[in-house]
Image 1: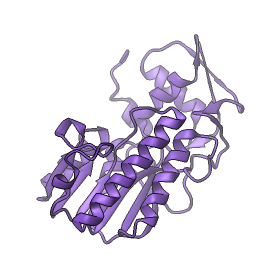
Image 2: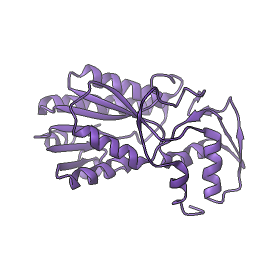
Image 3: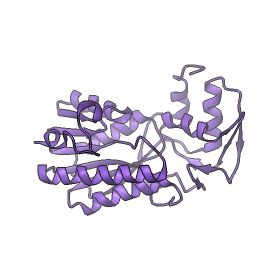
Image 4: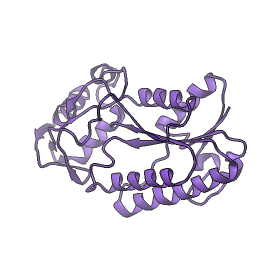
Length: 251
């Protein structure tokens, strides 16, 4: 089966490409680095020729509200139009748990716009909403830094290893389109401020994390439902503590 991975050179895309290639699939990792650009349309038709499944894990290079919305809308329209011409039979896209609950976040508004384009396209689809990657927690900490103090919400979230997200996508690739949304989350619910402290400790970083219920997460205030999945999500197997043990001190 020919599978095209949009964003195939990134964290999730490269992992997924390796998994699918080992399983014997013909995999096309598509990104601007390989001459495929969903914004300009360059190389898109050629990459999709003969493809049965397209997996979209591309991300915006900018998180600024207008830029991220323009990226996901333009990329989504161009990609879905090209898939329709190519006769793609399954569009699988990676999104974010909480996308429909946090309208104050410009990034999540853009992801919701992307999801709506997929649903309206007429192409059979599956949307996988994932919780925050372990690999992203460091960026969350950095975004909340005020000198030597980091203010983070104590709201619960269920972070997940990128490897577990790629595994979930690899499984969904081989299944029939759900024409719906499925969620995947890590095994443990952790307060965001606690996760921040755990990351700093693993890196021997002495900055102080303060729990602040008013602290904003990329533009929005959180509660315990904001970033946690609904009932019976798919479940990653890697625990945050286990993953942190692999992080080199001072990295």
